[in-house]
Image 1 (cartoon, helix red, strand yellow):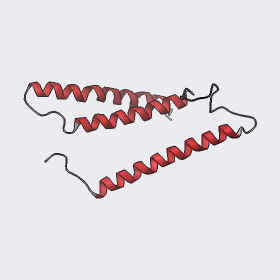
Image 2 (tube, one colour; image 1 turned 180 degrees about the vertical axis):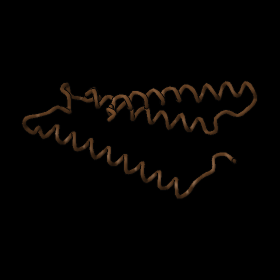
Image 3 (cartoon, rainbow, N blue to C red; image 1 turned 135 degrees about the vertical axis):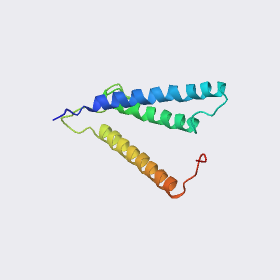
Image 4 (cartoon, rainbow, N blue to C red; image 1 turned 60 degrees about the vertical axis):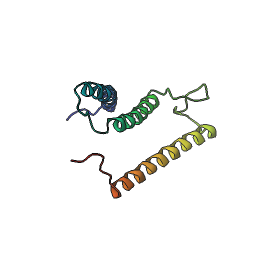
Length: 121
């Protein structure tokens, strides 16, 4: 049975996104020297990869417990008793993530209902 390591997947996903962020604009520059078009909609892809690198950085920061916060102590620790301020912060974080996921899903559904051809085939 293979060993499933989520950190390895995070590392390679982040590496892929960073390489894509560098490779797409570089390809555009090189192909313009030859008078051809590069990757279609590469600027839009770079914008989306920038968003994904932000998500991946947030996941990695949360895993390492290095989130930006206004407190001096870590937010996600195992606690023997319930600290209501930390609990409210955790629940708020969950609601924000769920709201972003719902908004992303709605955007995907709208894009699937009304497709736009970016370039002719």
